[in-house]
Amino acid sequence: RRHPSQAWALQALVTQIRLQAVLDETGETFFDEFLLGFNFANTIDYFWKSKAHLITSLVVVGVCILPFFTFVLVAVAWAGRIPASLRGSILVGVGMWGKAAYIDIIFQCYMMMVMSIDVHLAGITLHLTANPSPGTFGSLACTTTFLLITHLIHYLHNCTINEQAHPSESAGRAAPSRSLWQIYHQSPALFGDLRGNISETPGGISRLERDESRGSESRK
Image 1 (cartoon, rainbow, N blue to C red):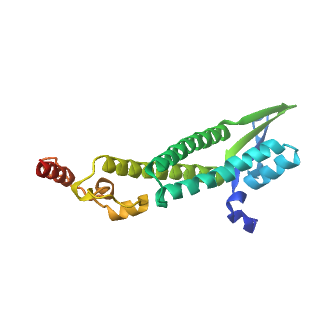
Image 2: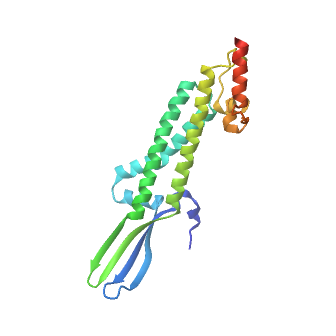
Image 3: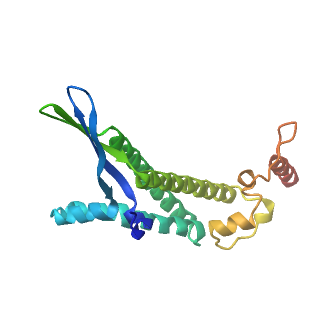
């Protein structure tokens, strides 16, 4: 019977320990059940009761506090009116953290899939295996999504940097400080390639390229 708290992410199963008992003479499996199920909450509780306070603190910081902090930083980089240099530093740091977290979750999934212990007793062989559960795959999906969003925001940031380095004629006057969210919605031409506003002609020259060439000719 599933407990109502199973709906919370901290109660989602991360891995299950499966035990198979096989008779050596006949090869018959007479026991095949999931013995233990681990989620984040009961794992932390087990570590803490085992006096592993340092490991418990590191796990809580790495799994709960740092991800929340990185989400806040991404929101600030997207919607905050901050200097471009600070935004770039935030996105570089968050991107490095996202890549490290992605490698870590991939390694965890791999270890759970290959981890197996065989115990040989008199006439019986016990197979202990760890099976990844929805919590593991959910963490992988969330980490992948976070990494993609970070790369997308970094791409938009680079677009604004390029625009500031090569301002158009209409940008002759100083523009007020704006967030990436405001720039994205107020400057469709800047992100035309991303938003699908650039159409290729048979000659292979986009509307944006033609506009840039006309602007350079008029400046001459």
